[in-house]
Image (cartoon, rainbow, N blue to C red):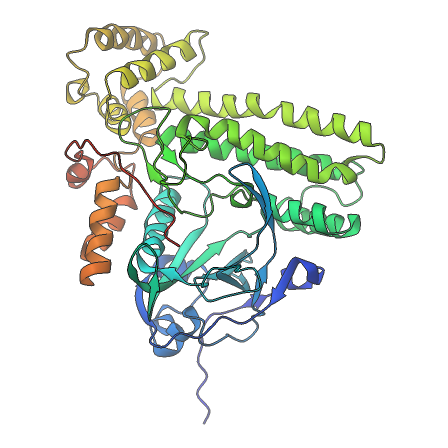
Length: 489
């Protein structure tokens, strides 16, 4: 009797049915010795995948790109992008989209292998990825998910048995990325630059059907609504980044999705000391993508997205420009409202008063002036332990604290409700840079994943405010050398 292996893979391939100019059909390049480094069991189960199978030799072969599962149609996506302001042709130079997994709930997610070999878009790259950066993406993307921030996720990391050359020789790896889709602002830029208006329309219609199905098919303003919906989602996303101190590091237009998910975790990191000028990326010499610039860069990127849609917005070019400008002009207010709402919650404010923003900005100014830790300061306030902050002896903070206590005292909500709101809005733990680096060093250099597993366990419940999390709130020793991250991929 034939044995039937239930793998759980349930692929559809709608992206492969777009015009062929949007992608190149290509299989992943096999690797010599694939080994499962880490598997996201809970994510696998939610996708409808058989965890036991994924841990097997055959399952690992799929995650390594050595075997293409039934129903998949591997391809590399074409896109363009403004990289540090400079427009260029790009594409998946080291990633292959297997297809779209349809979950038991009927949800649709891209399954992409990152580091799976050269493609027609590789240019001079080797198409491979190093273990450290793939594990970094796994840690940070899963932490972002736990923080309630829209993000691509990481299903697995496979070591390949190969060595890749970066700053030094490093073990090779492949990450399995799960995303609502990989449609980027840069995908639309590619269509607008090198495709026909009909290609652009097909892409826009596909995006609406996949991400914004409530936009009516026969609505004359459907592409204006698409632009506005993308603006809304990005405004909400960037506000959430700012509220937890996340620095993406490389906000090129090819790294902004139209779904509103955080994508491409390269030189990303979380800010310890509050400073809007914070930059971690080794390649961002002029601070274009600094923490404080992220809302402005998002607006700039969205303006580039709006430009691609001009032929669809209206038959009259001048009217199309007006519609685009009106939509983009609303981004700052939408972002600001999201940010202000979130910051009010971080301070336990249920209602609105006209001086709230000044109260918030005053606190941030005190943090910056005194080089205080962003996350731990808000954590101490949320736990009603101001004495735990490094600001407790600062006169400016003492005066601010009294104003804040008077402000929350004017609310009708009880103290317990206020603290509940604050604790659910302020993470106790974030993936602090020194903890991430320690976990990566142990895994990459010593094949010891225990630190990473423990860190992931703690980061999975960032709002728990448990005693077990205390060790993960301790700051690193001060250093004269600024922390730097590298793309490394």
